[in-house]
Image (cartoon, rainbow, N blue to C red; front, side, top):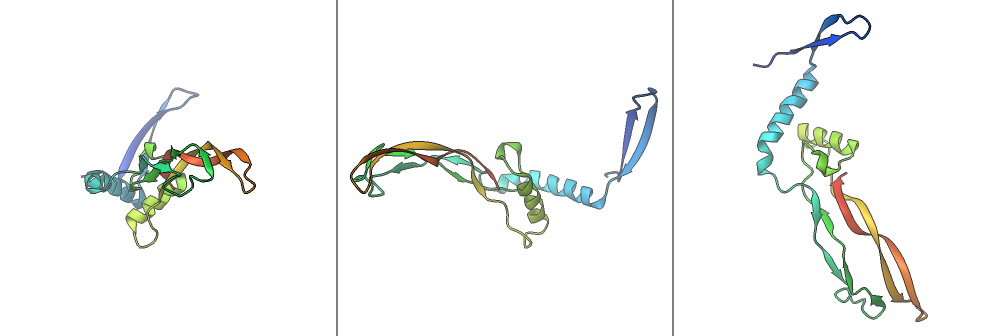
Amino acid sequence: MLSTEVHLRSIRSTGGKQRSQNRSKTPKNQEAFRVSNIAENSSSDQRQACKKHELYVSFRDLGWQDWIIAPEGYAAYYCEGECAFPLNSYMNATNHAIVQTLVHFINPETVPKPCCAPTQLNAISVLYFDDSSNVILKKYRNMVVRACGCH
């Protein structure tokens, strides 16, 4: 049986004396602890956690081969997976997503789970023909997923 009080001991920095404190856990803290234990025990039933997946984009498959000279395609990657309570540190979750996940776990009708989305993106350089048939080298920002997280 869990005690509703936590006994803390600390040493005062000025006198070296010890003092004791009793702090009562609030019902909300107890609920979060209970929810955390339930989530840890049921995590094996969930789908895979939010992470980066392979995706190669072929410009030929998009029908762009007539105006894009190079590259022929690129590794774009994509993000997919579950953002379920509790969010682990490797999920790159925002503080907002952590709170949203807890609210969703306690009352799913209130708010949806956070979404798995890119947290870091890189650019690619593309050599192409413009409308006047000039050859252009352009750097396109935010084209390659480097990391995913829960938002």
